Length: 244
Image 1: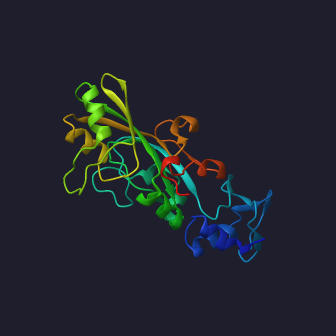
Image 2: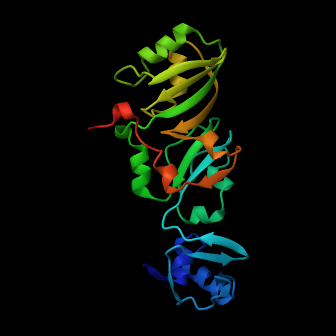
Image 3: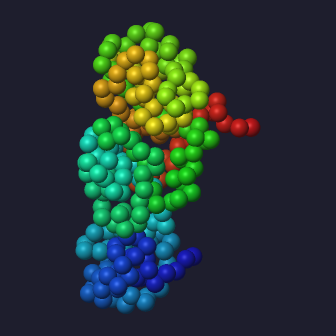
């Protein structure tokens, strides 16, 4: 059992400063189990806690783990420069909670984007040492050829990389479309690999991370959802790269 005062709970969940949260409570805007709680010093058990603010129900979460189906023309940055940031697609509470993208997708790349306020989780998911496969669907400018697939599987040399980078797997989906699986997560890697192989990436979508697929989540572009423990367990390294 973990008990916190109600103002601390609201602040931890991203509803604003402690002073603002106390005001919400004193104004009668917060209820638990249908009962208004107007004393911000009230100690509340956070286990399975649900509370209502402005008639909207929220569940207490020590950390949040979400996935966003990122549309094009949004930047994976808390301080975007040329396009809106992905945080504008989410409830304002997540900004107060210091939600961060796990890695980045280019502004014109769509698909699965993990976000969290759990630092160790972000670090673990971003670490190249974990070899978590990421599956992309790339649309190419020129037709896909067996030679292109062979080059991507065999490895292509990128500028500023000490050794060639190879796809874990790669297959043709259509005349101008491939599915490519990577583990490294280098800067603009899919686009740069296609360019090094003599083609050009005209559209890119990340469809899967580990064994968690965007299709299974049923999210339209711009939609998001919380990830539960079972779904988080799917964000794991590939079997071929696991130690043991």
